[in-house]
Image (cartoon, rainbow, N blue to C red; front, side, top):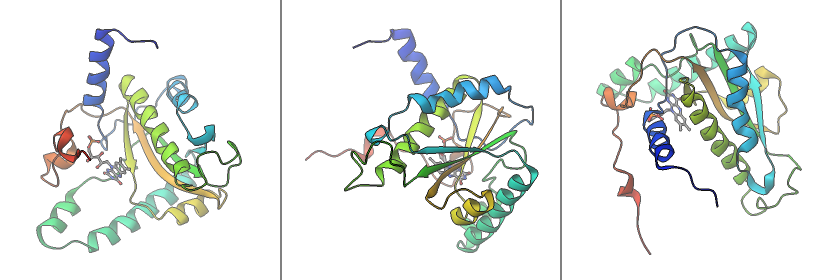
Length: 210
Ligand SMILES: Cc1cc2nc3c(=O)[nH]c(=O)nc-3n(C[C@H](O)[C@H](O)[C@H](O)COP(=O)(O)O)c2cc1C
């Protein structure tokens, strides 16, 4: 099995450390060849039964962008209404999407009805197709970061509304709405830690043995 050099291993760790969820972008466009190169990560990703169930929708029209932004604003207002006191105040101050400025926006769906892979591995756990899409997004995220690009994952959305607004098949389940662009700053600290919302735990606190 091919092993990678110590230098590469250190760089890979750096890449994982510096990956951030980014919500503050410069509006400078991303050269299409860089975007396409990063999207190649999907073609290398694992998937249950090699079903490759990801469906990628590049959001380019004002109509689609407007619909996604309105969707986010509505879902975010609903989410805010679920908090009270200090938590509500902190939530209201969070920037939870970069949809106003990210030069690239991509919706990623899982085709729950794909026949590719002939159902291998998905009979008892069909959700594995969606997990396959998530794992591919992770590769894409790191590929972008290696180019100095940032990705912000937006999940404060009504998925059925977005699917309808984009006019994609009803068998497609929304997995992620991704804002992509050049980050305004690099940081090692997640934004939610900076504002005191939540803290990252050391890696092995969730590890048990049986
Ligand atoms: C599945 C998923 C959905 C997320 N949805 C949102 C979101 O809707 N809005 C947001 O601001 N951040 C979202 N995030 C980003 C997380 O808040 C972020 O990953 C976490 O705070 C840790 O920060 P880091 O990614 O910079 O390490 C999401 C992340 C994941 C993995």
